[in-house]
Image (tube, rainbow, N blue to C red):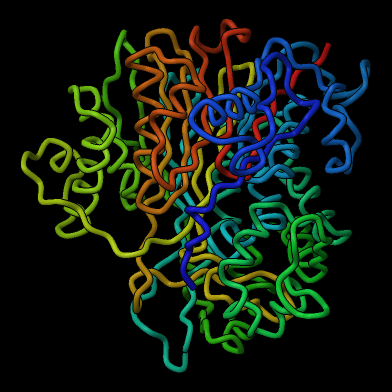
Length: 517
């Protein structure tokens, strides 16, 4: 199954959410008008001014929220007054789950964990228990960025009898590792909203509907997938229809109660070993037990004015591509030249490995050429403390192997490096000032081979040329890139009224701010 839905443009606008920018006028091509002017108007409608948004105004989102419109009441545990942070994801329900955590006094780490688990329910085409990803975390107490790597695990070869070899799942363990970095809310609490959505149902989003339409033929050939994602009369579910995933809810509930290690060396692991054989994935208990996330130093390069920007390190080589593109843009290249430099760096690293900094410094790299790359999804979050998170997730293909694990309710990610399956170019970055211990910018992007420039382009235009967030997104994220972007021009902790968070209006995501008055 190809990930051709990456290049479909779906503007997502939510009337009633916008605090200060005018809505785009309807008409023209698509729901928001046509041309660059309409794109800019839609983008401005997606921006949220952090100092002017109050939670009660978001009435159009109330139907997505299982816990009501706000956080804890005044006088109750967890109540926090004032600016709380912001989040942007490629799925509206996930952004809402993250904002709810911020409203309850949680950190950006807590919000990212809750949003990621929600996406396993609401955007399983790109994020799933059977998949993985990578995240960057900025901690102002350390004035540094760490990289948490939990990519869907490679296999040593094609297992005997496996017609669709699965990657070793790492999402649950990876999110638990992320939770160990500056969290304040219990891990099981952050999983509960996703479990409830799976059990009681959620509306199919525009993004998921587009992904379903792109691969409905091969996906719905699997009877279990047809029962979940198909319509009774045939064909895939459409946007707005109800999606219930009772078996996935059971798996999430077991992980919540028994701990994420259960899927690696407990009851769930034994069930997964047996059930994966039934769908051609053929995972072994030894592989599941050995799969662990890594904590790595990011690729960290200079920006300007004492700022630095950290990118995901290999094996998430989309971060290397984004770093190379950013360096080229800092040296005066245009967006197209930066894009080419980034892809050349990623291709060179895949060809020969080695020190990624040597690749960054290399001159005259041959052009980077990639076949169709897997889909992914991005997320950024930050809070009033100045903690920030930027993540990219993948199933190594739209809907992974296209087969749902019987009795467990989740799709298996495709094993990278086997057949035509290549690893994705997962791309995310966080800019910060080590002298001020301040958060400056976070970016994450999807879009197959456009993902790296989707991070580097907007980051460079905002950091190096001081363009507004909407202009940086419009001018710096070409092609299929769909970028989630947060920027605080006066840093955090500090001036929250100078913070903005945006979701690319060509995609299906949403950006939300959290504030209590």
